[in-house]
Each structure stands twice: as C-alpha cells, then as structure tokens.
Length: 187
Image (cartoon, rainbow, N blue to C red; front, side, top):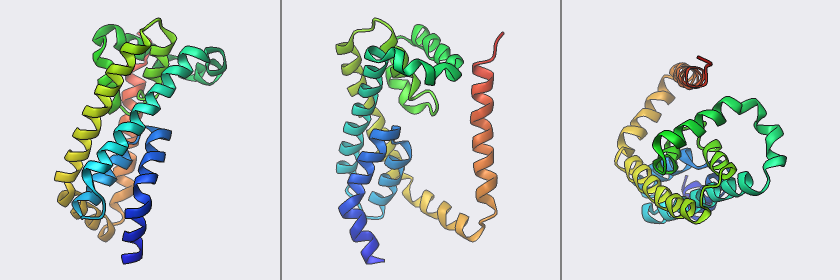
C-alpha cells in the first residue's frame, strides 16, 4: 500500500497533467482533490497542475478550430448539432460560455473549436480561458477536497455493493445522452 501511495505522490501530478491536457481533466482533478483529502497529494499543487493543463487543452482546441478547420471538419460532421448548440450558447451567453463550458461534459471539447471557427479575438479567448481554468480548477479541486470524506465513504459503499455501480453509470450515461438528444433536436 505504501508503494502505491509513493508512486501517486511521485507520478500523480504527471498523470493529472497528461489526463487533463488530453481530456479536460474533470475526473482527474476530482481524484486529485480526494487524494489530497487523504493526504497523498498536495491540493494547491494539484490545482496548479490542472489549471495549466486545462488552459493548454482549450488553447490547443481553439487553435485547431482557427488554423486547421479543413482537417477537423470531417471528424466534426457527425457532431454538427452539438457544434450548432455551442454557437447558440456563444451567442446567448457571450464571453461567459468560455468559463461555463469547462463544467459541461460533452461540449467542453467543441466550444473552443467552435469559437476558433469564428473571428473571436485569440487574446480575449486566452485571457477568458485562463480565468475560466482558474475558477474551474479551484472550485472543483476544493469542492472535491471538502467532499473527500463523502466520496471515500461512497467508494467504500460501492465496493461493498458492487451491483449499484452499473446502475449509477447507466443512469448517468442515459441522462447525458437524453440531455444532448433534447438540446440538439430539430424543432
């Protein structure tokens, strides 16, 4: 057990960075917050790593939308409705969507690409992206740290009642699917 904890303190920050750069990092920052609660990782360092990685992720996606539009379009075609939804959200919420999108699973990847497609200022996007990454990392990091006891008890409960995990996962996946089906439906 001590060997695993030592590896987490050594490689946990690297894993947090890589996962967050590659996928946005919601799960990773929650795990880092819980591990910080348990004393395995440092919360402030975890927040800083997640903040930088999340900022880099969205900046990269913005640049992909801005400078590689033709390369990306074949992959995005099947997500046209979600892309349209992100354009609508941008018009409706304006600059706030850059901060809000960090919390919306599924649109988190498409919103920076969609903004990159527009003539939105890259400097303004970078500033708001950094502000959003800061708010996101601090709120999720501290939130999962303070909910650490609850989450640890939940994991222990799931270990004892393994049958509940598929039900929760199926319910979560179905809810996300229904949300996107409703939000992107033709009217």
